[in-house]
Amino acid sequence: EMKNSAGDAGQVKGNGATGKGGLYIQPRTEGAQEVAVSLATTSIGYQIGETIEIQSQGRLQATPHAVRSTSRPNVSRESLALFLQPAPELPLPPLVDDGADPSNPMSLKSRWRSTFGEFQKATLQAYS
Image (cartoon, rainbow, N blue to C red; front, side):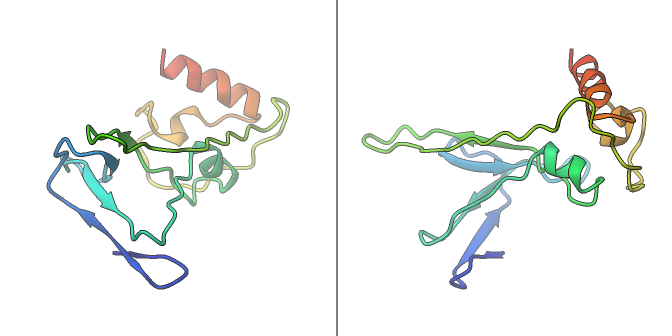
């Protein structure tokens, strides 16, 4: 359960994707199905991305997620994407050891370098 600033609760429902529109997250537990997230109407959800993961040296972790549209008429999904990117020459501090497998290309540890530009190149190579 999640709470917004007004104290209203949202829920994470664990039955996997149902085909309904909305936000779905992928738990980090091995073999776990993605789950639907339901927020109270007075809530706003934030998805932190890999940039925050980098800036926090791995202390905060981005959640794998997907947003599915609905087939209901006259219903739309509105979003505002804001992407932050450090300068390529920005030195990256040592990464906090999160116990991740450095051979897993999805792990921050496998792509961590001394500058953001080098990290970005390693990330592009890992996902190509």
